[in-house]
Amino acid sequence: MTDTVTADPIDEFVRGHDFKLLIDGEMRSADDGTTMTSVDPSTGDVVAHVPSASAADVARAYDAAAAAQPAWEGLGVDGRAAVFARFAEAIEANEVRLATLDAIDGGLPLAAALIDIKISLANIRDWPTLVRWHGGRTIPASPGNLHYTSHRPYGVVGKILAYNHPAMFAITRMLAALIAGNAVILKPAPQVPLSALALGEIARDVFPAGVFNVLSGGAEAGDAIVTHPGIKRIGFTGSVATGLKIQQRAATSGVKHVSLELGGKNPMVVFPDADLDLAVEAAVNGMNFGVCAGQSCGSNSRNYIHSEIYEQFVGRVAERLEAMRVAPAYAEAVDMGPVVTREHYDRVMSFVRSGTDEGARLVTGGERPNGSTPDGGFFVRPTLFADVSPSMRIGREEIFGPVMSMAPWKDEREVIALANDTELGLTASVWTRDLDTAHQVADQLQAGYVWVNDTGRHYWGTPFGGAKNSGLGKEESIEEYESYMEQKAVHVILHRKAR
Ligand code: NAD
Image 1 (cartoon, protein in one colour):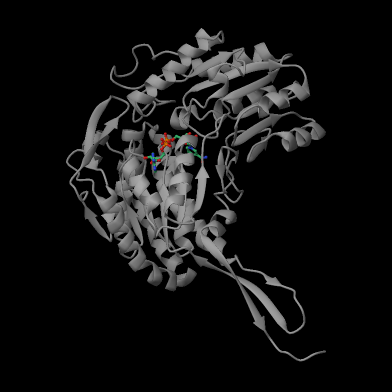
Image 2: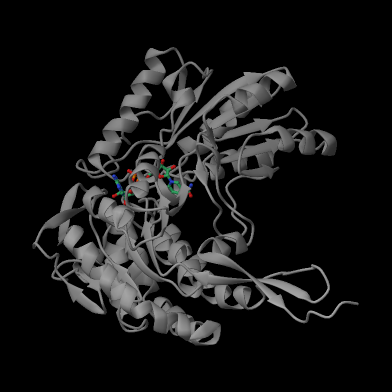
């Protein structure tokens, strides 16, 4: 059963609602009473004030999590699976509420936000089954000896999140840690606290007190999680700059296991024999305009199109972008919502200016929509630059917005060098009907996740994570589960009789 869509989403789900931190099974204000604002990017209006956690709140959440974790681990997979089943039911009953909150403060079109919740639900249901099949190893050794490995949770895990899929990240990125028997302290991004705090309310009635804690806040709360000496495992999703800081700061309070899901400047390489219809569609879909206004780590923001089909490709993608309806995230007819904040809008626009200043060809977009959106909202039309070179800012830096670039190529070796000419290596995509070329190029592209004749799609079960400066560690797979446990080797003497 699900709740129902409402006519006035802010009135229904936000106004008059007291959003609180979840610590030790209780909904609490921040220890020092500090709050921060939640802003609707479709209008620019402040819609709520929510707690901004401090180091004192992190310390309290840690104590609760550390106290609750042994019993949670003691439940075993069966016990935790039963809690996950109840959690899935509770999320399903609140799916419209969670999705609407993401539309309100994250700017995700409601339909896309609902898909995020459906994906999260499938994940909650998948994890217990997956981990039942997970085992350790036995290692053949000398006669009379048995070596085996076992896995134990770290204890308390800190999860710090980026803003682009608020509810989906808040749900899916703590599941592996929890099913492995850890307790979790989760900090959503400060731009999008609403769905994570609502998730806290939902989880309070499902998880034992202290097992799952939600703290909205900014860098101070994040740093307190990273530097807490008891938190040995940190899972981070966000920018490269913050990821690098986190690695440094984590090391100030002990040896820590840090996984980093960071940014991308992802190439899509199209050969002249590619299926053009599919490739054009995938170039547009892979940018995730319709999901989160292009604010996606895995977007194919750099597109290298063979010169024989280049102008045609540019024209067809531009046509698709021009047809997109940019509107408030909870409007009925919307293909793309706003970017997340005024600050980010200004940043995206500064990239647009630098593109034209540095000589790229602005094919479409690069401006606010004409009259169709509220004046205060942070809207940018889907934007396409052609003739982008790697020396331009828009050709090198992650924009994390609805801006894609294209450039023509003729020589295969040159285009692979171009595609790899970046510090980042999250995703890449190659388009051709030639099997040899496909495998050869996939092999040479320096990225953690490569699509052949596709973009954007995540297959849960396949490890997702960056190469180069795009990250450390894998998620969405059994590798993620293993990364939330320490491996122990046990050596057993079975007997001492000589053969
Ligand atoms: P960000 O780095 O600004 O913030 C991410 C989180 O880190 C936020 O919760 C923030 O409060 C927290 N934080 C900031 N400073 C901190 C500090 N000193 N110590 C601890 N925590 C701190 O990133 P963002 O703007 O929210 O997200 C956009 C970035 O995230 C992009 O680069 C994007 O590519 C990346 N991203 C990567 C993935 C992935 O799976 N690889 C997914 C989504 C987003």
